[in-house]
Length: 424
Image (tube, rainbow, N blue to C red; front, side, top):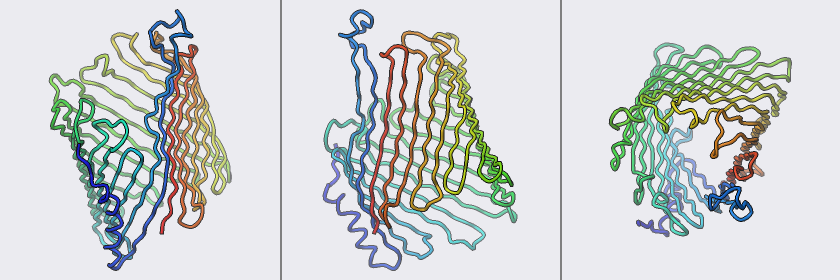
């Protein structure tokens, strides 16, 4: 397995900062620490004898996928006062791996009729301790270029190209080296005020040198509309994609449609009502037990209160999955109902907080030995706090609990990530 020179990884950001500091422009550093944790907890019938001697055979199993403290140092350099160009490098280390990242960004200064933008990133990660897998050490990166041309006073024609790749130290049946390339061409229409309509066509391909069966190409269209009116706003995104793999007989080929709609209307100075609608339809050319056609629909009807920096809303949540299978006993169809609660604080420059909770019940259409109805609780929390000038703390928490009639089916998933950084 390849080993990155540890000393080089440690000093590279410092050397870059020393070099660029001799040029005109803006130079900034940041250093920080963080902690990440990811685990899943469930019951396991270790001998397959559930009901015979449950005390002897059923145990609670907890699998920890990630449990790391990390340290990070980063440097960022802008050679121009208008920040049209930005270069960056960062070094991160945990007890198990090292990671170095180099970034570049270009934004054409305002004033020209034609606009060009560029974003690029290159990341190298090396696992050096603990139980390492083949996919733990890799190099990956992406580059994205966008060109915007004016057609009329409120109309813009644009094109975008994006490429990305990943290369592992060693490949397995679950981790292959691959690359993706995507091209988009679209039109943006400004509708007055802050309202805007954006439509594009895209083509995407993926190449997997070690497994041509995983190669695919895809094409489709996207539409995004944001409409602002006196008492509210509408945010709509829809995407239609047709994907074809290199496998014989059209195996895994599909047509997919996605719709996300958000609508908000205000009543008076503080009361607000929000509707959130999600739709996903997936249709395979050759459906089977692993690739089933389905329709998933979600709807939230929230009412609440907004004032200055604070927003609170709650209301009913419903989601359903309808599958089309020849053997209905293998279906995962369900109807999910519950109560959704949201709390946001976003007005202050020093603190951002977003909390979402859904408590409900999922009723399965078909119940067997491997699946059953359950009560659930899902929590998602995102927070960023500038404690004092240039000292930032951030937090990400995502958790889900499932409670079934039989304890053996209970499940718990927890993702926690936190960081503390100081810029200078």
